[in-house]
Image (cartoon, rainbow, N blue to C red; front, side, top):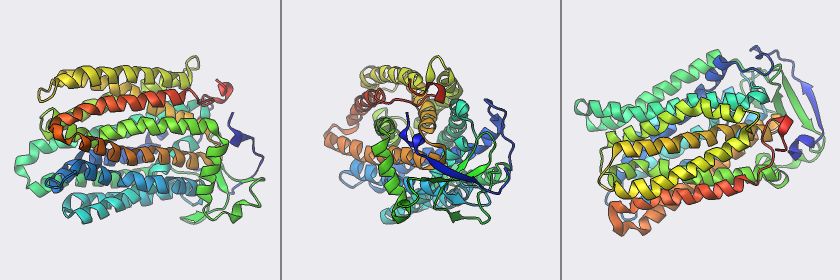
Length: 481
């Protein structure tokens, strides 16, 4: 049981009426969930295209530099290093934001708008130092709203509907990833009619425009409960939205009243305290680290792996990404329903998906990849990518519902921020670790990529072992399962 839930709390309702109607008990407003998910759609839209295209841009810039894999991996890790430092901070800030737009929307508006502007600039910057600076600014902007884009969903969703809500959110978000992977295919058809510079830049421009349009749509359609009279003001105390009424409350924990004001780096102090006092959450975060160490390696290097190891075109590599993302999207609702089933539960669902994933990775690592070096069998690769994609989505969907159940309602933002801190720690380390590993085998040339999937398999097995230490995480009635 979460020790955070047992601390005595004082609270007071804020004098603001909800601007949206709560859904009936134990039901989910699907239309509103879709609209809430638009900000997360833009996150995966931008990141998916970033992870596909930027490594290829770096290949051009770093073509004659020794250890280019390690350098490329280090540059791709910048965003994750920023997220590790800033996610708890922005997650905590959104939990304490007093705003006439609600506690999450200011972060979504500021972060999305600034990220879209920097995203447009990336393909035009071909000086390495300048490109690193623009990537840094883009990553900073994304960190502003990433936690808020996730945490806004449980604010307006009952606990019993977390798995269903998370499945819809992941479905919508991964539609962004799917669309991002169609852009290289579209650009392949336009290559002869565009200059080289515009060929690289057009995809970034399209995505930036979509980000700006969708943040306007979300601002108009999603009316968060106001938590203050100004656009942006930070409270000392946590704020909470009651999912049953959408009313806002200000929370004061009696044990923290005297001492918390003395903490200068409040967000990071609370981060450490949660890890110390909430062991189940700590093991859960360990699972997250190793899962994302595995898949961040794939995302950072798969375009290079496909082009070099399979010896295929950039457009064909985009097609493989499409067949990886498509099944994830199509399976999102199904895998959420499995976690929603009370007989199975979220945790058992995750165990099922991790077992499935390990079997699929064994097939990919030891059967498919060894026989496809410079001899790509597209159908065989697509089939195994589908078998990997579905259980990976199963883990993602149900991990968020477990996260929100472990978190006290007034700390959804900082818990989500902590999830992303560990998630992004993995994303920061993965390109460097795997890039360094590839550099060790540089004498093997393109064949060095054969180590990718055995490496990923080992990481997923470690995550599988850690997850068995997590207690709680199902709905409250069966919290101890």
